[in-house]
Length: 223
Image (cartoon, rainbow, N blue to C red; front, side):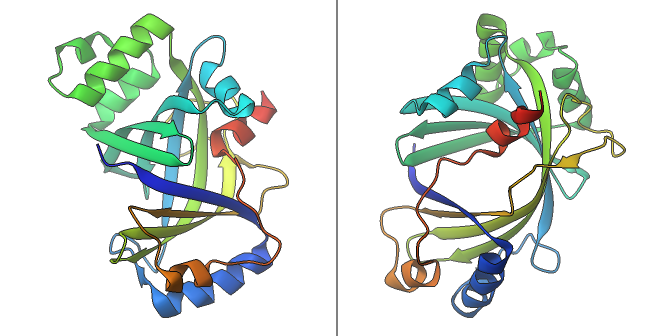
């Protein structure tokens, strides 16, 4: 299990334009992008008591969440992701899903998962059964990712963040999403054992401090 350092900053559109120019000079664009960016749709899960949401808002040190993620509206790139956080460190593993599997999970049809040999799918099935996890909300956004080999650094700029409110029809391209208010852009920096000085300097913004911003938590304000 490889834990990675993770730092987030909520920044302005002006900050984003400055950082974009800096990062293009010292980092490479992720090879999976189209014109330097891609679209992400995530379906988040929580239980009846909103355990994942409350733990995030309360700043619980060790927590876990699950989501289904789609890239560029391409049904061949659907993944079930488990995100585990411990303080400022994070770990993520995932399993590929077919469109039919993703839709069945969103609809609460999960018995097929018990027969899977994938540990992520099996773990999610167990939590859905024992904790009552259900689909809660869709979050859409645009991501510009940059990579830097030393330190295995990944820097992302996420913007145009939108929520479906109570809609969980994950594969419906007509599912309406609305902008999350008072959120311009989120800068996220991830690295393994060290963060090179050239990247540390590039992402430095005067007066900005790391935040506990969560797209999932921000999207739930509309409930």
